[in-house]
Length: 225
Image 1 (cartoon, rainbow, N blue to C red):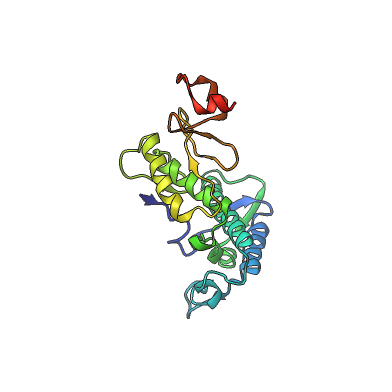
Image 2: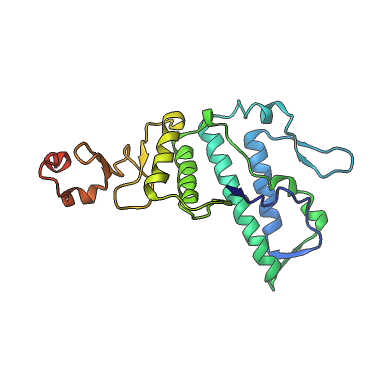
């Protein structure tokens, strides 16, 4: 797989950039809120750029004082925000807003450290966070770049990609979601919330709307319904 680095290998803006009014204040507010919720600390070595302190106990130990739900939601929302901002800044660089504000390299130094994507250790994953990670992985394996991740080889078939997800399932699924792909479809669904029914006759995950399409005379799902 290939991973887009977004802002990771950059140190700031090289020149002023025109952005929509309120962008700078919005970025600073977001970064400060993430720092507040997770307890992230800023540090700086000599004249190097400011960055989050990866050696701080909270960062190093996976934010033990933050509950799993808050941690997963904060990290998920932050990472989505980073990717969206990267896309927006690319657009503003090519097509500067005519009625906006200017962010200078000096301005950017106030928040650039917060444009880093964060991770959650698997043992802290909530069911929603696990599902989001597996949906991203499934899309990537099917040859559809997602969240900055792309497959470097031929895309897997639906059955192959679903099989990989089921392998991860036994080790990572925190909520017994049993993610799989309904027969004839191309997306992940959960048995837990009724996204598919399991047919003991066909040995396939079946979309609830397709139960009556089974050609088998003694289909267990048709008999149940």
